[in-house]
Image (tube, rainbow, N blue to C red; front, side, top):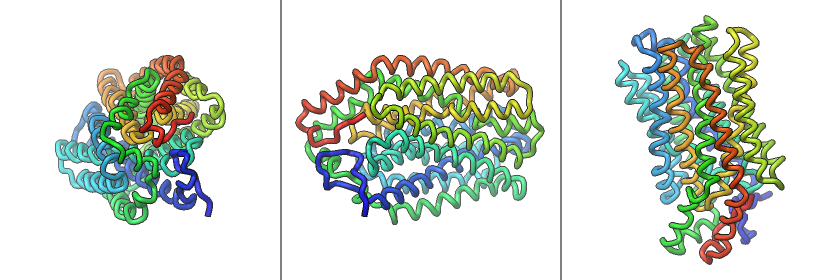
Length: 442
């Protein structure tokens, strides 16, 4: 049977994860991420129905979306830290169960406050899934695949959004919006029950992490400090979050945009919006693969590519929303979203390379914190506020400009990236405890 070396790339060459099992772990973890985003984004497909039935403003609708991202941002760090300490597999299964039950609560909500509470609990359940899930995935594959894995895994969010909006729109048109939420909840509950039966912590935990954790509590302080001790890793968090302001906003409001400016019904608007989101997911994977291929021997190119993705998406989306409704606009939106999420792979790889292996779950939690507090939470809400004042089309014209700020922050990270990598590696060599821990390789 073929084996991958564990993500630690430790000197203990007998430590490995079976290739087939590694892909099973990826598939199940990826499936739960799809469920995560199906439960989160199905709301977007039924925005028009909720707006009419409960007489809601765009800012209220945006808040229903933003509260999930806000809770993810606020809770991802502490919950990921707990998952790193008490078992990632059990934590992932519990999270999935909680967000699925909360999504079922959305299906039975009778008014806006009840829906808000249910969405709040969806956010609590989903808070640490992305960060802990990707830590599980990269632990069973080689390091040189990090950008590809990070982008492919996070693309599950895009594919989940596609399914959530497309299926949610169709179900809502035929059976009512409540059944849209119920269908997403049932899918998540099934996977939540299967996951801990197949994925076992003992089979995915590298020996190096176990040894490092058993040495001394004092050794924890230095790994944790790598979460924020370098300029480039802090800049990566900020740049990634700002870019997701653009991506998250377009994804959330696109079904409503199509409903208002293209006169599409809920089902058709959800389907077309899903195609645009699918472009984002495909772009994540392709851009991540490009990053791994071009940057294996020139790590600083990761940051240069992130800058290019930010500026390219700004140009395309700005041109799109300067046009009137029509095929040309939809084409440019699709192309813009194809590269708008391209920063996900490089940013994930940069964070992994700049932080200690033993706190990768917490490191990705910090990245998720920035993504949500700077991007996914404020984006839909601010755009909803602007929409109430000037209309959704005019509000969308301002959104792509945030990518310029993201590019500027990534440019700052580029000037410090190699120096910070070298300093981190030097600290590892000089620290006897970390000689056992996993060496960071670019």
